[in-house]
Length: 116
Length: 112
Image 1 (cartoon, each protein chain N blue to C red):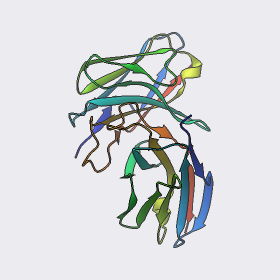
Image 2 (image 1 turned 180 degrees about the horizontal axis):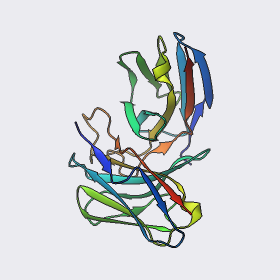
Image 3 (image 1 turned 60 degrees about the horizontal axis):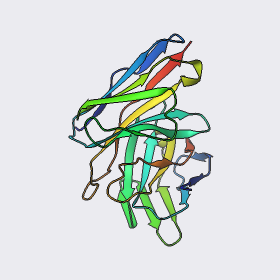
Image 4 (image 1 turned 135 degrees about the horizontal axis):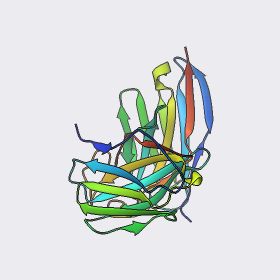
């Protein structure tokens, strides 16, 4: 069964800490995405990557950075966590071409981050 | 601006009822996705469609490209169908390297 695996389901961090959220996919997908989900706002794109070492800003990149050193792994970094970054974080991947794909996107189980 | 609107925001129904969730989008798309999210957070892809209709079990998804509208139907609804259903549009051609634009979701509760 194909998977997108996020390293933690729940995290509690202190304000000012550097936080790493890890995402690994086993489908050889070129594209990977980080979203955050907040009540009333839905899912919003933070960063995405369409290839190793490539990254693009999404709609809300402020306060975040990303790293993609290997095709299967896409890391989201909160340089100095703040309470406003308390949220559900979801990772997703997709192939470069969705032609012939059943779903196109595969999502991880999410990481619920609380910054205190 | 690329936008996705979903309705209703909340829906409570009795077991066995036929459920319809609607989604409209602002401009042309390459694909429309229906997703399901249960309490606890993980998102499961239900359908990806660019034209016509798809069916999987009791779930049916349709799309009308001219009207920029899609619907998700659940037949013979069951309490285990209770979840948040999210419509998402891929506004870019070539597989969506720029990510999806999401509706706000429909919170569905099926009562026994």
